[in-house]
Image (tube, rainbow, N blue to C red):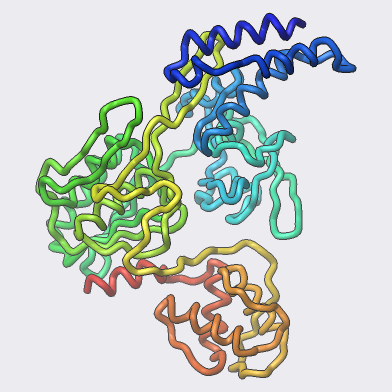
Amino acid sequence: MNFRRTAMVLVVLLLMTSVSPAFAERDFSKLNLFFDYIDDYYYESVDEEVIFEELYESLFNSLDDHSTYFSPEEYTVFTEDSEGSFGGIGVTIASEGGLITVIQIFDHSPAQVAGIKVGDKITAVDGESVEGLPLDVAAAKIRGEVGTAVILTVKREASTLSLEVIRDIITIENASHEIIDGIGYLDINQFTESVISEIHAALKDFIQGEVAGIVVDLRDNPGGRVDVVVKAVDLFLPQGDPILTIDYRAYRDENYVSKVNGVTHPLVVLVNHSSASASEIFAAAVQDNDRGIILGETTYGKGTVQSVMPLTDRSGFKLTVAEYLSGGGNTIDGIGVVPDIEFLENPHVAGDFAPIRAYRDVYPGETSLTIYGVQERLAAAGAAIEKDGVLGPMTLKAANDFMASHQQRTAGYLPRATLTYLDEFFSGGLKEDPMLKKALELLQ
């Protein structure tokens, strides 16, 4: 191994290919000094390839959460077409606090069969840690050949589980629609190319059905292509309304405005914390142009553009090259879209909560396992309360705040109806969709 020679080659490449004068003028003497000392004095032999792969990774990881270096193996998986012989496990994942979190599981999917649950934190794939990895890199590791097994290590509450999942072709419906009580309901799962024809079909049915308003559901929508979401939101805006600005540092900015006169029905857009990227562009365009009501939770806050570049050694990298700004010039990245009306969604929190026995009303000052179960559920939803099994003022207030946020009745105690609602809400057994119900009420 000759660190000196390799270091000089690296520096020359940087000088030749860099687009930034700052890099070209950088003094790399310290880097060469480090290589010299490692080469001469380190007490063991060092794998040069490992050292440089980690250097490349660190370089991109130091920039932002979405810029990434791919080893040749990772780049092959990342760019592999998921059609045909490659498949997945049937989940939607998000990065929360550096942990890969399952936020949605498709019905009858391999993940559901294997026992994966919403809220599970995936910490390793086939024994290799994915903690701190960019979301798309972790997703690429989970994806693979149809029929092959992948071992996922997941954290669930206080437990760590190892689950085998058999990959399969995952068919995702990009959009679905129906008419509910005279209101058009359009659920968009992702902004892929084919979704535009599905939106056209939905709007045709809504117009023929003479709906009184339209609900567009973007909850758990991870995004998609910019050109597609521009075409999609265009169908809901007047001609000439600003949609999006892509703010480049190295190139001229790109501005998008609506090109057609879209439908004029009253509009409500549903979002949650997992609505990201292209779905945030849609919601922001509706909000900035006062075209409708944004209902739900503050969105994820992914407002940057990435460019993927292959390298001659079959590795590659993904670099953030621009930022999305909403039509009104507002920053999305790291902030998200704040809803006009905040509404907490059913979190379907996975966990073994204490049971709630809703056979009678519960009054302040009482102590029971049921109250402890109520406190566990409220704490899982973000309430800052002590889990002591006592129905005190803070617990009662948290329960009433939660019920009020879902347009449910509140009281100076916990009625049986409140206990039942909390139990069903957190178990996923609640038949109704509270946020959708609220949207329908706003349009009727």
